[in-house]
Length: 236
Length: 236
DNA sequence: CGTGAAGTTGATGCTTCTCAAGCGAAGTGG
DNA sequence: CCACTTCGCTTGAGAAGCATCAACTTCACG
Image 1 (tube, protein in one colour):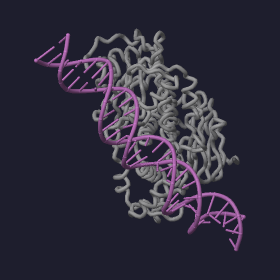
Image 2 (tube, chains in turn purple, yellow, green, blue; image 1 turned 90 degrees about the vertical axis):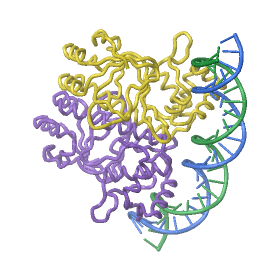
Image 3 (cartoon, rainbow over the protein chains, first blue to last red; image 1 turned 120 degrees about the vertical axis):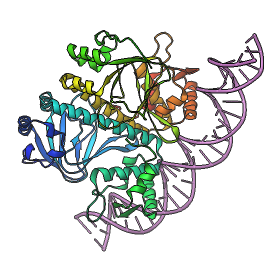
Image 4 (spheres, rainbow over the protein chains, first blue to last red; image 1 turned 45 degrees about the vertical axis):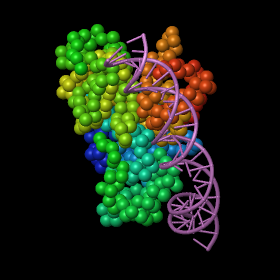
């Protein structure tokens, strides 16, 4: 974690994607004066369950996996995040809500202390309102996810995970490969299964021409077929 | 669904448990003038996924199960709710977020139309702020639930469901039985398993003296033992 | 080029689901 | 009041799905 010369929030290229675009200019400046920015190298922790942070993190740049640890050192990936996203967006107030986050690639992170973020919220009703809507959307998504984990079989879960990855990070315009490199274990942690099962079903989907795998890169060749497999449910 | 003569919000015995206690007196009166109250008989729908409601429901009185339908007519119970709780608390704004709710016993429900609830929020920043915190808590709980559904075995899930029911509805002070009567299927829908599995594990827990079952009533005899079974995880 | 990590694949066993039969309580109608 | 139906619960047996284990291959990185 190395501190970086912070750029101003209003010049941040992630501002458009961020909830902070709802923030008034003068309070954006307040954030500028009080935020702490730092780099995190790929594979390093940004948040750790054992040491909950009292504040709000923003991803200025990079990709992050957010997860909770569980039984037998298994991890459940809660969310994949990218530039403009909030991070550990529940630990900043209230009692402990431990969650972990690891950089999937080199990241630039901004941090605002709990008391400062609270000040911003109290003085930016539009922001508070948007944050409330954001949480309510996330809550709905999480409830759909919970139902899926409870009811889908492994093929459906893996397929669903692939569509989620595509949705979050998209695919490379030239090569068509997903814009992220995740291990089989990480896809398993997202799907609630094991790396062996993921490997088997990816092979099967590859054989069926629905996807194409090259090393740890994955290309989705038919979104329609994937959706047909996973979306026995109306999703939203 | 029969309309009832509405009592004033400020006289509502559920107000203390409700998020609306954050609402200013004059806006509470606004709600009074604009809300619609009605009774729902046990077993009847309050919300249905096929017809999402554009507004916010409040449980004035009664117990409700909130669920999403899934594969093969299975249901996943998302939440058990009681007096003072919000209901379908995400369908009131945004695009469709279909969810179903059924009365577990006779209920009194209050409804505020989307446009009115938005007016209230826009003029009660404290309420908006609290609602935001409420959602963020619920989001965290839902994420823990998702991890549990992905990683726990059936015994742990059933045990966890029992503790959840105890937490929400409590136990009868005299008899010690849980203050709600749920079918085995409903406990299964909460645990993400089948009614037969629930029946088997409840029998086992009964034999081990951890719980006591009498018809559809359940008495938890040792919270400690139940927690020991389910809480291999740090929960919060 | 060598070593450790990640991925693949098949065999095996366990957990869970499904199906089926039987029981008892509650409700219905003659 | 009693037969009859229905519904929920219980229990066992069999089948299916999944995790685990192990052996092997490939890849990544110094």
